[in-house]
Length: 200
Length: 415
Image (cartoon, rainbow over all chains, first blue to last red; front, side, top):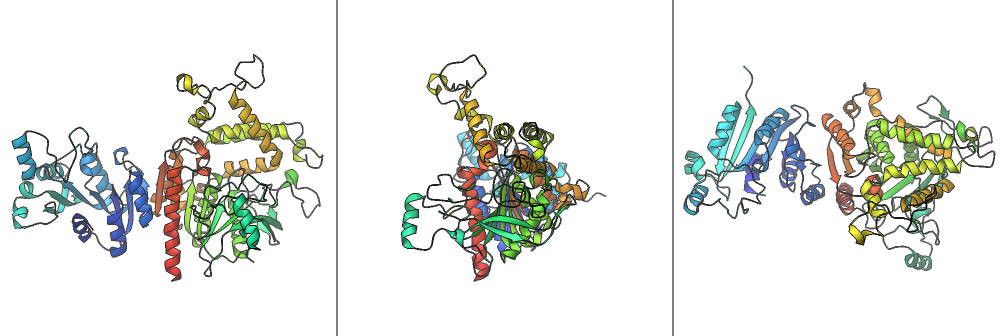
């Protein structure tokens, strides 16, 4: 079980309905179904991943997130997940709106480009950061919308999303005191728990 | 009660040896259909009823002790009970879903007990226009009542009870068969665990109905149709049925599939000739066959018309046209699925223009709205609507994985 998935799992209540956008091989939903008896559904476009989901008994719908989520009713899920997927979307902002229309809460995780390693890489080499964690070149990467913790905070503010919780961890998914204080500098992966602010 | 005759020859090692020589390893081999007589009255959607009827059935594999491994497969427009295996040693044409039913195949007969029947109104042994009406002693002919998908499913429930099956592990079908799967999930959700609906649609489009109407008019306008009483006259509207099938066949194939199938000869010239292969290598400047595609369609149509009943074709196309489970729910299909707590697997094929992926997505959307548990795959395939009958690798793999998981569940529950 990937550590970031464990952090997500802690945010999910037992027996709830969970929609995982870009669910990969279905590991998280499988875990949540086994451990928390959630009713899970994943969206995925990679055929191999879809097969892994079917093999695990995780319901999966072949659907491209960039084509929208019109087929989902408002408030039809308790939690909508977007784990390590937002950076690959054409319009992350629109999808975030959709997420919080469909789910009571949303959980978003992404690689933080404000991390000091990225800053040092770009500053010293003058080239786009490539790491073991994100091993693509700028021209072939599926990740077209990188952001930093600060950028994401700003987007949440603009959209009036309420941040129920924010965790940053390193690539080993460990957090510490320093990371909590300088999340945008030290955090490598950011995990946000969001909800739409209640209308006054 | 169980029909064990259809399990392939078990009488002697000798015949099994013979079978393995003749039939592929992963085929159920030699099968024998069995007819079941029902003398309960079946009330039909039209308001008419059948006071008694026959259903022709084939089964493959063994029902387990718990009766929990049974799968019902539902046939499409021109199908029947013969879904897998062969009827004789000389038979070189296996059942219609041979790609999916057999040892090691998605509906693995080493694991599941598969039931297939000829639907009412069919022409392969179940009560239908080409059978004798017990009340009059004559062929039913055009007087066989118009049956609907709902009526078929009601008769399938009676068959299920007769076979001693409480709940299907899965009900599966493609096209019109997929519509029966949907009807099962809506009307009898407590009697199936999984609904597998492939290349189907929530209801026909105007274009779908239009093609069916051309097919029906071809049959009805054949001078040998005699208002449907052709069997009594010892004749058959073969020309009309041929035309009907030719039209239908075009809608089962994709343009790509036709280009590929009829565009081989000059491939080396310049890639593709748009499937315009000539039959004799030159134009004839007449109204006979010039292109391969014409000869193929005529062959398919003529072969079909020799083995199929024209009245059945009319009935089956009407069952398609009438299918619309939303009618009982003020047009809101999602309300139809309110109680359908079985799990759903839907699949569609990219080049299917008869029931294209959008139609399956429409179903998925309504199932999601109803809060149902559903998986959906959109399979890239060049073969058009027919793809659900063909060995498209991704389709077969996904179906196998899904069925294996169902079987693991059955085994776990039994333990």
